[in-house]
Length: 429
Image (cartoon, rainbow, N blue to C red; front, side):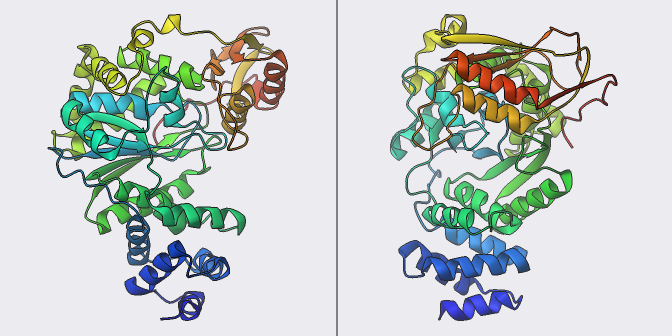
């Protein structure tokens, strides 16, 4: 078998065989297939697409390029949840404890912040002492005991994806739905869960800017799961404004605590409720309506919050701050961002809001940057809200005044205030 023939076949729009896809993935991961041939095949896929069977095969081969986590020793249907990324997206940290409190084991591997989007691992590491680097046996043992663990991805999960993603990034082949779906789902298949709830973000703060594009991606990911014998459901959720009131690592943890105690913001509470109910549904806990009631029950009786605290303690985190979030150290510099005019907030460029959090120190502009866990933004007003000139729209938390001033300038160009109240935001498409 020759890579030249595989490239030619896909260039002509023909369907690749499973063994041809396996040859490519294995060869590229090992270094036997050079970058220039891999790039040629990626470009052919970019132009000609892939069938459901091809995409499923590519995903499985990418998953099998490294460690395949075996969760069979954990009783029950293991359900994972994935988000395509957004601003203020702390959903995983709310729904994991809710699912575990209802007897659904959650063994979750998460990532760090990427670009303007925050990362679950960075958020968890803002809790002093919290360890996101458990050995596999300890990870599984914790889920067996407590029903919940959240860690960073191990170094050898889907290494083919890591190499291919880096190549796509520099060859203008990122925006291919089969390649995006395979990238996401290869890591999900390798993580060993039985079922997946996929939170596909849509809007100015999301990778998918339109519902149509997001639907195609969601369909592709669900099809990959189905083709590989897994259950999956996807929700398209709004990212045309930040989710909840906060963006920034510890600020979001504090909001997670509020939400698990039944005091969270309405939009975050609603979306978390829907995602968690679907997790329970995939775990055969009942109808969606019954599962929603189970979600509400464990928040009201405190079991979901206790499950979160249990996970923090098991992974070395300081639960003093979980019980007393107001005692967490404050940022060195705090600045209010106020409305420049009276009217309604007609729109927010949510991607720019995410970039503003990076400027404040809550994310990384470069891979080696050190995150400030105290940095971020608290939003007092969002799209649709009425404001008077001088009202607080947001509060910025950072280390230095100049960082706050730079972030405020970006918000100036990101928030539109007008005379007309916009239509209400649809949280789930």
